[in-house]
Length: 347
Image (tube, rainbow, N blue to C red; front, top):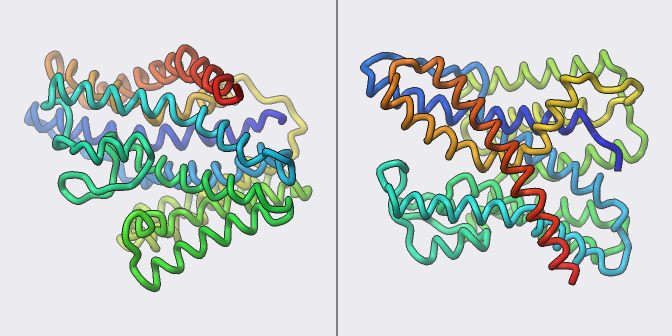
């Protein structure tokens, strides 16, 4: 599979958007302690990085796994690869979160989880926490609960003839959402049936278009990027865009435009040094997504002691430390653990 630099760059931006969303909360906390003011930027809905991730995930599953369609043992191989890719780092992050909670509960903004929630977190099973929110112990894992649903449906569809893999997966996603919209479902189906899962189907559709030869000229792609960003700006100003269906109506199309522009270029010129470095961060985007809260909380505690009023400097420093931590975790933990678990699962 050739390197899709545009997709990797977009993965980097998606992870950075989520990081910006969280670092501003820590900056508000510091400003409150210092008796100063910090006004978070709301020009973009920063947590829309999740929507980008979901569309990208749908695209990547079809693009990277199309060679498995119609092959014997493809479902087992696909699921083994996804487990090896997702589980080690997420389990490590969850375990670290629990250890920090035991050692210093004041550092975290969450109550003590029950044994059921802890087990559900490791098994990617959506359960309510102590205050009734449907999220795992390490709250960022809520997105991975959706990802694992998608992988399970896609893996099951690989048992079908090649031409039915994508339609069957999309039909299952649409069926879940339609049923939940018509008759509220109990957990875990009520969680899985939220509109955001349709973004996986959108990503799969982009991959099919690309596989059938869709290639776009540079100017058209930049127009699509501009349109996608404009929709996100509008989403930030819309209260309806904060609801599940409003979010899908705004962020979904924006993510589709951005991913299509990133994935369907002609690829005639070599990427610049900047693009290659951003793509490198895109490789570590999963690590950045899971690691950045730890790095930012550590930086918040440091600034709380040395310069709580320097919120602007804190934002820049915390983002930089989060990026460096993610690159280190990706190189020295995520990559080797993924390779190791793949070998074990193959055995």
